[in-house]
Length: 247
Image 1 (cartoon, rainbow, N blue to C red):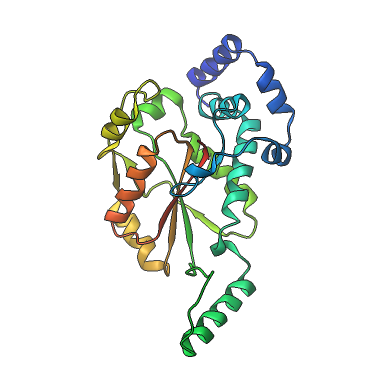
Image 2 (cartoon, rainbow, N blue to C red):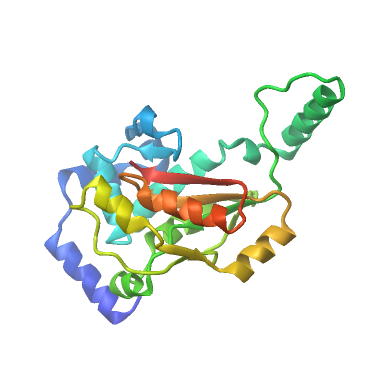
């Protein structure tokens, strides 16, 4: 952390002392927070699954402390929640279970039977954080989504995931979206990402049926996440999903 960033953090702590909601939040272990904090509404889980409901003040403070204060405790809670959601994916089941599923697939296919409740097997799961521009990184000093995935990487002792921060690129800087309505957010999100073509080509060529999962801290309309996923699909990624910490 640079001197400027250190001073900035001290000023933030002085200007924004812990609220009652933050005191409660920081009394939680990651495991307790994952069990206690309210889940995102079911109707927003279909296209881009989200874990927590942002309207809960504790969740809002969790995101704020990750995004602006780089709080280690908040990151531990957020990273644990993201990890727990990711390991629920069928692609993350133990190898023995994958082999059993493959045998079922082969048997049903050979007998001409319809298969139900099975999923395509993926040899590699690539986690990609929503990127920020160089300008935003200079302002803040870090990308909060990269930090969340660092925590996921620490928890991932079985190496289920490959984290790549160099695939998706934020091509331009937008003004903050907080006060903008859905229409303006959707418009502003168009064309804001590109991919590092050589890096992506290498990943696709060296991994069988890779699954790409884009990770964001919070989504509102889903415009940024949708644009990121669409950019990857246009670049040749056939299996793309998104997950956010909060909605």
